[in-house]
Length: 85
Length: 410
Image 1 (cartoon, rainbow over the protein chains, first blue to last red):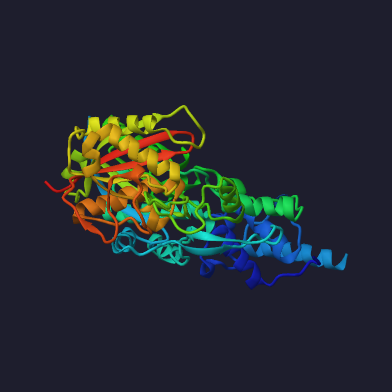
Image 2 (cartoon, helix red, strand yellow):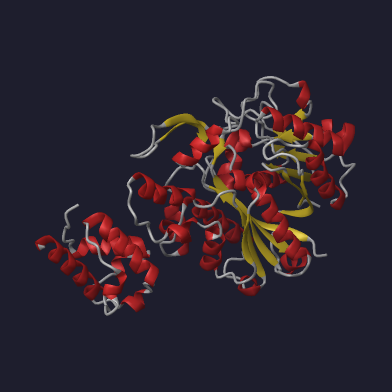
């Protein structure tokens, strides 16, 4: 499928579902560690992101991300780069 | 040896999402079995319709609410089917949050298969869609110990935790293991039982291939019985050292007074009355119940021609002429065969039967078979004076377990 750039809300939905975190507690400022998002959760999120939006992101590309906002921006940037490629 | 008290029970099946709902349906003779159309997915050869007993969706929200966080969505159905009754059993026992859970409690659950829905979804991606990537949770959700781990993590239970597997006797072996640990003083409490979620498209086809499935209904011990019906769900018993339960003023629902285990070492699917009889004799001997006439038999009773005749023979071999006077029920006729979860669910329903003095009827029974000349509970539920419950579980591969419970009534 052609890559689609997801909205913040769409990404919050995926993260909430895959990492089993209450949707209401997810904000761009939230710290990944404080949310208790483990490495397997990140891989699960990336798997769903590829399924739903056609964006391939490797977990290694996210090692610098500390907040949800940073993680989501990285995913969106990959989508945009793929779309314009 | 420590005595073993039962202080909590939980269940989920096609009959309902609590033991109370399961009991009410069983005693009223309400069926959990219905004709079901299985989807085969995008890449399957086409759907299959057959009688099955499936759990109604929607029970998950109440469990998440009781736990205060979303847990169910991260689990394969087979693990959900054990977490839900584990919560129910723990709450009934009053042990949820109790300090005994920290180190002196075991969790042992039996499953024949584990996370089939998770595996099939992964394999459909791989073989069907030719996708090289599996969901990263495929292994942790699908492994056979995902259920015990989910329960241990959810309730912070840090004693011995493991799964047992012996096909249709899995939860009976789990109950025996938990009981042995309490009897030996290794732990003070144990959550035991089992679950199964086999109503997946590929699995149902595999079961159909054995040619042991009824095209109509599960009718144990009936002359026209023509096979088993697949069910799904699970059940949990909270077992506790008798003195521990007494000391904290717990309500005791029954006592596990005997458990016997044997192997036929004979055939991978055919039963052997001799092996079954050895398990029953062990349990009855430990319970000093060989000559008792107040035993309710909750039969393995799958509804296959071979099983029910063999079970009749083995009961007669152990209890002699007395066997024909013992009331026999077979609730797989109501909730289908939960494979690894069956023995625990049937034992939980059987313990309620002892407590209420009522045996639930064998459903779908039409005609007597001379090869099954037992005192079958057919038609309506029957008042009983039984003080003991014999729960049989006989698995493919000739793996047999018999459990003897005593009523809590003095």
